[in-house]
Structure formats: structure tokens, C-alpha cells
Image 1 (cartoon, rainbow, N blue to C red):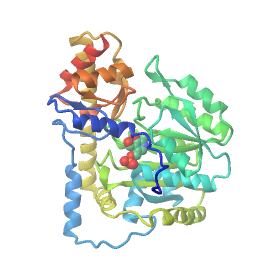
Image 2: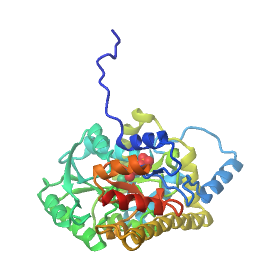
Image 3: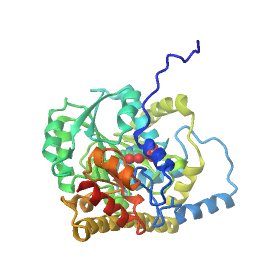
Image 4: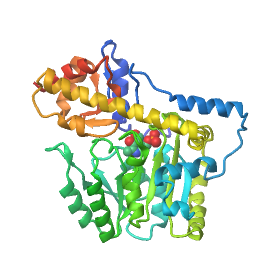
Length: 402
Ligand code: PLP
């Protein structure tokens, strides 16, 4: 008998499963709207020109391949924290942000989960929005936290269930941990307004809730990195101590390079040093130290005024192309095809994704009849749409809902 004969087969990943089905489809009209990676106007992966320039600079410098410190490349981590918190952030200026380079956003969430499980002195329960990115629950559960949910999305309005959100946060046990998507909520594309963020901040204060921000899309939501950091910066200004997971997968297109940052705001440089020492104790047995190349790319871009300006316009370019696809899809459905239903949410939603409101049977029909692939919850990656396929997609949706 094999040692592994009792290992049960696990369920396939719901998102990667969509890609498998897409690959197997031989129809030339096929469209993959499942994957959360940017595609250009021709449906191709996009390497940012600023990234290519940074790589040329790195190659020319003949940099070595020595190990990084446990907490990563300092030239990258300092600038990444500045990008998130803002140059005028008090904890940044006062040297009291503990930060460590991470294996992209997922790794940052995992380090944060482990740190909170070990050192957070209060309730070890983290509240996630319902729904949330599918990997949040296993990441935090495997980190040793208990996972619960707070209401977030209202199916009826295809918008934010703000009353439900407030009620659930008010009823959460004092000093619980709350996961907040900093911008471009995945999977719904629905974000609180600045006024709603201010109220959420007040509730967190009243209840002593600990905010853990997941910022996987800074710049990708509005095209402006400062605007997309509003929620995080507001909370910090309001005096909250926060945890933050940053990813450079989407906004620099560095998906496979795995570049991210985990950070915590502390009360003093002395406290920061203690926290740093414990973050190192968590990282060292997990993967010893992070990879170097992607951090060099991000650090080079963030550290060069010229490349930084170029990068910001490239992020805006990606965000704006997505926004233009939202407008075009809305217009085609509403005006050209007179598709039944209300589609304004396609335009009001933010970031990479749109929760279309399509039902599981409709998404199944779209795959079988029109070769259009998306997750069963009706979420589409707007980046998968372009001038060449958007009308075909709209026609497929139109047929599926009639
Ligand atoms: N958090 C959210 C909300 C995401 O959507 C993603 C990626 O899809 C991530 C975190 C982490 O991505 P990565 O580990 O590639 O940075």
C-alpha cells in the first residue's frame, strides 16, 4: 500500500479551473475573463516599458546575486512604504513603520496573519468582507487566525451593503481584527466612498478593531496611486495602528516576480525595532529571505524620478483602458443591444473586476454557447476585454440573459 493512499483529492482552484477550460476550447472567438492579470488592447500580457528600462539599468550595473537580508532589499522596502503611506506620513517620517519585503501580496498577508496570531494581544479573529478574495480565508486560517465575515456586498443593488457592514462591525467582539481592501475590492469592484471610509474608521475606533489593509491594486483603481491610498492614509491620520499588505503584481505588472511588502505602524522607533526582530523570526523559518530581482526592478522605478513619472503614466494607462472598457460595455448593452436589466454597476465598479450579476447557469451557458469564460459567481476581469472582443462579449451576455 502506498504511503499516500489515504490522501483525498482536493477541489481544483476555482479560478485556475476557468483557465484550464479556456485553454481546452479551440474556438477562435474564445475569451478568458477569469484571470486577474492585465491584458493589453490586443489581449496580450503587458510588460511595462518602465519595467524593461529598470531591467536594463540593473543588467548594466552587473549587480551580484548575493542573499538579501531577511527583511529584503532596503532600497525597495523604504520606497514601497513611502508609496503606500505617503511622503508626509507621520509614522514614516518618525521612523516607526516596521516593514519587510514579501512574496508579493499573498506572502505579505501570510506574514501578517502569522504575526497577528503570535503577537496580537487581543481576539485572534479576523473579519473578512463577504465576499472577499478567495485566498483570504485559507491564508488567514493557515496562519492560525479564526476567520469570520462582515456583510459587504448587496446583491439587490449590486453595490455596497453599507448598513450591513456597519452593523456587523459594531457587533464584532471588541478588538477583533478587520480585513479591509484598500481599493478596487476583489471580487466585487465595489469600494466605500471617502465619507464611508471615514465612518468605518470611526467604528473601528469605537470598537477598538484592528485594521489590516490589503492593497493589491494601488494605482489600478483610479489611475492615481495617491487617490487609491486614501483609505489607508485616512486611517493612519486618524491615529489607528494598521497592518498593510502591498503587492506590485498588478500595478507594475510584476506578477511572477513576486514583489510585495508587509508593514505595521508602531508607536516608536524602539518598538519598531522589537517588532522587526519578531517579523524576522517569522520569516526566517518560512523562506529565509526573499528573492532579489523583482525588488530591484520595483526599487529602481520608485527610486528614479524619471522612471517613477513614466510608471505612474503607465499605471494610469492600464486603469484608463479598463475604465474605457466599462463605458463601452455599458453603452453596448444598454443602448445598442437594449439588453434587459440595469447595467450601470459595470460603470460604477472599480478596478480589475466587475461583478456582472450573471447567475451560475448564465455563466455556464456563456462558456458552452459563446466560448466566454468567467468564474461561476459572474465576476469578469475587465482587462480581458478589448476593442476586438467587447461587442462579441456583449452579444453573448445579451443572449444569455434573454
Ligand atoms: N489580495 C487581493 C485582494 C488580490 O486580488 C490579490 C491577487 O489577485 C492578492 C491579494 C495577491 O496577489 P499577489 O500575491 O499576486 O500579489
